[in-house]
Image 1 (cartoon, rainbow, N blue to C red):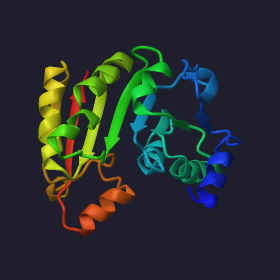
Image 2 (cartoon, rainbow, N blue to C red):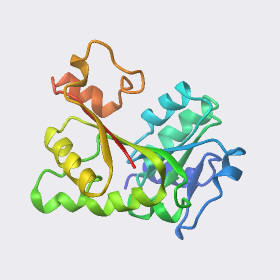
Image 3 (cartoon, rainbow, N blue to C red):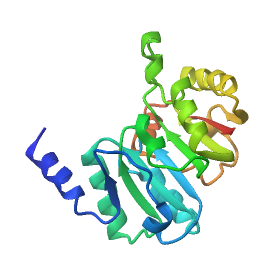
Image 4 (tube, one colour):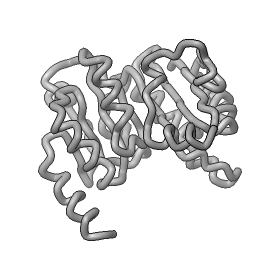
Length: 212
């Protein structure tokens, strides 16, 4: 790890909008945010571009960006602090551990924005819509909680449709080639760094919405 990355990760401990712990435990998010507004998670958030843009659109909601990569979280948290995002927090954690941080049925929405598709069959267990992950989401999502997936990988989209149905989710919307739509919902028009790269390569973007 470079010295610069090491410094950034060390600085995370001083950021008021970042939480990280070696021992996962349920967090009182009402105390953290100072209110009881609904919670939305972005998993594998990188620098949290999607989270910050959603937070602008919905100031009446709270958003939590989750990733393990400290340097990326540092970037997103720095921007959020500079722009005074009162409704955004960052959590450094493996996604396998997130149910330890949230009470059951406490999450309104989960966003999976361009997760690694892990295309090889032997890698399927690592996909963020693999059955073990969906079981975690089911525990923390509120009744009728929403799971969103944006991806450039059609195979991942089709795989996710199957695993979500098997896990008891209701897939209520599928959009193939999002940008071919005549009008795009503002929450889907947000573009991450990866999405911009995919679009520059003329890749199609796909979207899926499922209900708990």
